[in-house]
Length: 336
Length: 278
Image (cartoon, rainbow over all chains, first blue to last red; front, side):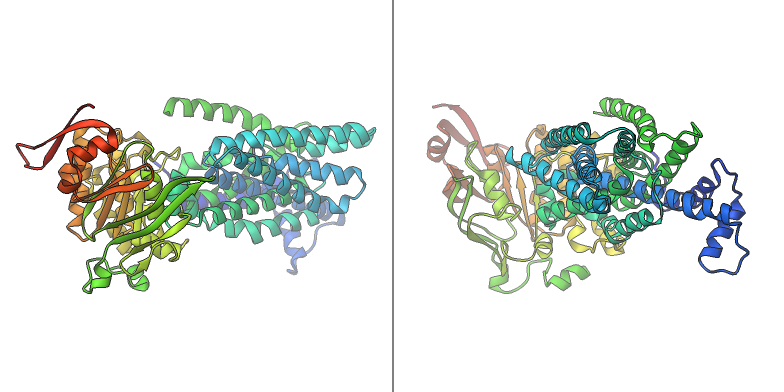
């Protein structure tokens, strides 16, 4: 199969991301032009351009820009985590959802949300993600060697448990309006994303995501399993636990601002693999870029299609992701 | 000699000096898994630059011993030396430049091409994010050529036949530029032509100074190609030495519980073994 050069695809994605962010900011109930987007950015970073009117600048700089940037960061983080987990569990169906990370994070987040301690939300979401992952791996390990299928089965069990507790907490304590709020958070939504959300997600990408993107060669060595990785001089357990913890950190940070958005981590790494091939040195950064572009557009759809009503972006990603997932399954069937 | 080899002070060819020239030496190696003793204080040696077979009935512990000797799964006790190197305690990366291991029936879900798989063997010689050097690429070329898989470089690994896969895994191990190569049942599930093919390649490697130890099921194959043989039974070495001294009718009856008749192959003159029930 002819593959596209990773560098060319990466350059195309970088340009697409830049364009997508700009275009996405112009889209919405109030009509904003391209030049206004750049003028607003320029005036805020200190260039001496004439600023927009206060109202229009508010729409660009206070509402849409942080939301679009958060979408880009969350998409990148989820796709990257998915690619890492697929490699390290040697399971093409692994993603932050399947290993219990998202459900754990959701449980942590919903708990503090309902306790009225919203400031702790990122911390609680992260803690929940890490606990769920630890539980998944403990369970998988207690069945014997940690194998791809055991990991996923254990993840399903942990997810189900975390979701049940989350539902219980909601059922027990949510009343009236807050129900809708919690539900939209559970389904994944970026409607509340402002600059603090940008700060959290971008920090996760820069501090954890970028170092993880540089581990492609290590992940390639896992293609034939732990024994071969070990024979190639890789510290298998340190690499596995380190990268899983890093994925948990990134996912926790993302879920803490966006809620649980599904399918991004599952589908996008496969799409990138189809385009440039399976080498993780290219796959990791390109999955992150494609994830960013994808979620920017998914969120733009989520806030505009049923304007003036907004739907949780998790519904959009599931609507797009589920059919694609089905296609991938049939492709696998025919190739094996 | 590549830069990476110089840095680790690992010579590629047989160096002068008695110490450096000694091969694989395992002393009192024991492996127990969840309380069960699988390998019981095994001593064995493999001379440098020879092809040796590790044989024994199913469940004797061949795979377990090989993994311990290759340090991919560390033994619970004992020491393994190769020349002046302490294989079990040396750092991982230099160890992966010294010794390579080919596991049984390697499979992958990944769509790696043949060339990508062979390039994995360069990992111990590279940092994580450097591009493949010219030296590295030429080692990959040589490895592919050694196993006659150059024409298959762009094929996806999982689309290959069993024999082709085994040759690719061999090339991957060769790309590590190892001095010691251990293989677990490299002829498993292969047709007879592919089996002879793999053993001929291994035999050829010893001429370049590589020390090869392969677990083999087929005693005739071991007798035809291997200079030395180590017989493992119940986690212990029951015999070891030059093939024709070790693989006797009495020993085979003892270890496998079958009657063996050993005759000379009319073509090669090497031992040929026929079996009948005890």
